Length: 219
Image (cartoon, rainbow, N blue to C red; front, top):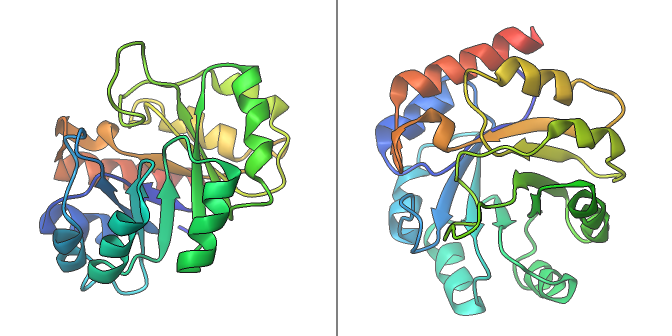
């Protein structure tokens, strides 16, 4: 399985080991206190110690330099995911300071939101298209909701895109069809709540089933 698949919100050795064994390409660790998936940079460093060739991603939300420095020191991520309202100027500062590949998350509900994604295409290596949070939600992602994937026919960006938001074993076939559509640049998937038994609690069986379905879908 060569397609990028990120299992996000990992917090235990069992879940990390299962994701790696199942062929995931990226391990996502969340650093956002309001999230049930929030962990410390120290724990993330421990969990990624034996990751081998699998890439580690530090997921942050409008983090300041002090916190990013702490993450870089203890975890040494392979990639930074910016899941807040980071401006182009802030993205440029982060790139200059850390020299890491950047993944910018965009909150999508409609075509107007999708059009804004192009703003970042010269500033980051990848985009992540996630569903816009429901009204009143405290989390920018991991809410288990999807947006209308049919609008991706109008996606006008040059860089690779990961699809996120509400992914699970029940809609993996449809997600893979979106990813395999040559009219867009979606190359991979990002799943979090869809492989959990409760918010922040990764389900080993669901991780295995999701990755197996991904392998079957691209075989």
